[in-house]
Image (cartoon, rainbow, N blue to C red):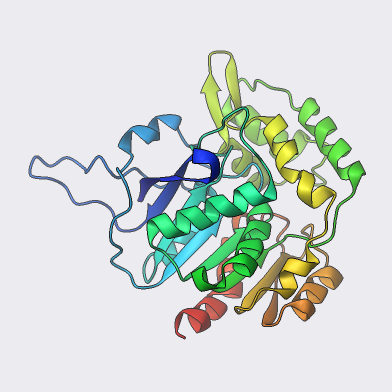
Length: 318
């Protein structure tokens, strides 16, 4: 189960954080607590109506250690469900829908800069009373995590970077992504069509990848004419500008906590760059997950757990 906690990010943007834990107790009438909603399992699309079960604000944690999970571009907190389930058995596990994503606010004129994303995560950690926490970030969320770790070492006890490059990608990457968004056959008639296109028919798919289809099905919502993404592609393109055009090696050198760099064997982060990231990190470690692509925690959840659990245990036992 996951309970929604509303927090406020930079510029007053409303953000949805999701605390994973035990199923809610029934009240005297036998009904489930309204403050709890089902955690989304892999491949199960979220419903925006879940916002009606929002809790009014942070509550005192029962667990003494915290893990804060940040999804990648176009992702949402529910993509961490399988990871958060086993984490929540021993730790306080919270995932954030970042601005423009999931059930968080998507203001047309909001900032989608690196600074805004980092300030959001910083504000959420403070409002949740979660720090010092271990930050686990995938792709864009990993960049946010290591920038926050460099900025606020007092809030961070450990860091896991999953399949995110520190080098700039270049202008051609932004043009390719703009063209890719244009190629989406939206609206999709059914979720099965979503799964098939992203898992098989998308020109970026080299071979059938059902996990990828499920990943994108989870970021779609039903509209009067069919299924469309919960995010605005223009906001996604704006969000990625600062790692398309800028490198982020310097911030890595400023991270003082233990850090694990994880890559999928077939992911976007190459081995040589990943190992160089480990080298420049003051307390860097390295792990690979076989048979995983960019969506490491989604492609191979058991391999992902095997790769990160010993590191987490070591950091959280300190």
